[in-house]
Image 1: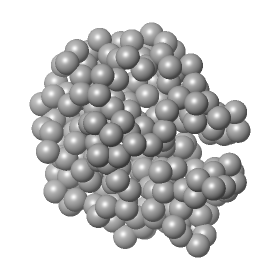
Image 2: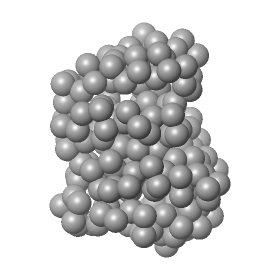
Image 3: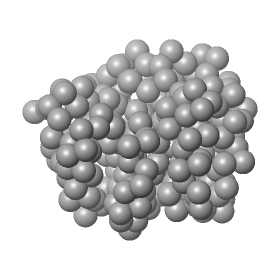
Length: 223
């Protein structure tokens, strides 16, 4: 594992689990609590069985947020909406390999627009789908639940997948981030980091906790 990565664990609270009645306050509180970025799940009701938010919400968040917006597109035909989400204020834009017929072109389009580009794999999607794209992406997001809803339990079967991806990245001499999303909490975050991840998405474990600062510190702790 790259020790530099392990020494720099980033926490990305997922606003899917926030209280939308007071979203601005929730965002300010996780920023003050030490969050490194905001994870924004965009769902279309087709690729996943849920509908969340679009570019106008991202744009509203961008006007107030002080940390980067990590926008995860769980949508079909993401290439049609890349420009809209970049214009709305995305700092990192990730797309699912399962939805992209021309993944390399989609990632290239994202990066040409001046933001970081990443790809996402569902739990059952093998790493072989990254073989032709790994050197082009800034981040790989491995889902540790089946996407579509917050509050699901972490799938331990993803841990060997994280280890294999870290090995691929290190062997290629790349500086690619490994993000993991789904069921991350203080009781399992160490195993995820030890497997090779350096960016942790946490929704329920942060926003449903009584102390955001303490929870984020626990997630970042190496103990």
